[in-house]
Each structure stands twice: as C-alpha cells, then as structure tokens.
View 1 (cartoon, one colour):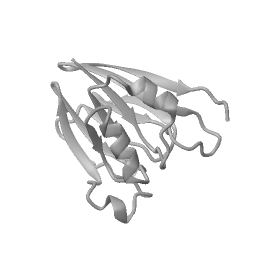
View 2 (cartoon, rainbow, N blue to C red):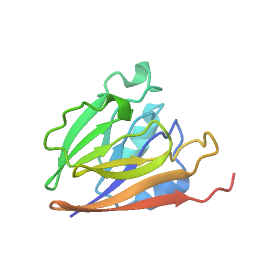
View 3 (cartoon, rainbow, N blue to C red):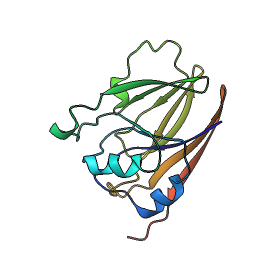
View 4 (tube, rainbow, N blue to C red):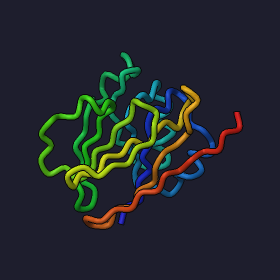
Length: 152
C-alpha cells in the first residue's frame, strides 16, 4: 500500500499546514505551476516527487516533463498540468491528475478517475486552498480532499 500526496499550483509557496499533512507520504505527485526549484527540493526531503511543468514554470523547469505516465501499485497514472492538453486516447490509464484551474475536482469518467487537487499555494480568485491524499492498494484507491482553513 502506498500513501500519495497529490498537489498542484503551489506557485512558489509551501504552506506549513500542507507540509505537516504530507509528512509520512510515500510519494508526492505535483500537477505543475511549481514556480521554483526550491519547492521541489523541500518536497523531495519528505518523499520522492513526480512533477510536471505548468504554464508558469519557465526556464528553470525545462528539465521537467509536461506530462508523466506512472505505475503505482497496479494503477496507471497520467499527470499533466492543463486538462485541455490530455490526449484524446489514454489507453490503460486508471487515474488522471491535473491542475491549472485551482479548483478541486474528482470525477469518474468511463472508468477513469480524474482528479484536480486544486491549489495549495498562493490563494487566487478567492478559491479554497486544497490538495489530496490518496492511498493505493493494488488496483484500489481512496482519495481524501484536504482543505486548508482560510486565515489570511
């Protein structure tokens, strides 16, 4: 069994409440708009990070792929920043992780689980600060939406 932290749109900010809750995860999936290498360095001290480049990740992030295919336990994941760039044909993908909109979304479409963990970085558009925790055991998974209380 693996415990995953699924985050996106940190925009150069890692909140202490997020770091506290992802401690102990086996891996971290980042859906892009990281904004600086320091964010990945901090996350890598907690667990291995699998990240994609977002539209705000510029020259510093040229080494980061725009999409990733991963197998975790018996599930196949596809990670990309912008949902509009997901290929039409994604054979054998069980879970699609994306970001960009800063809005938490969970949806099961034709047997594929689509998850946008929202944004856990800088607040934009007065939206919630969210991310997800997921446990994966073989082919089964369970997702929990984590909401960071607003106190700004």
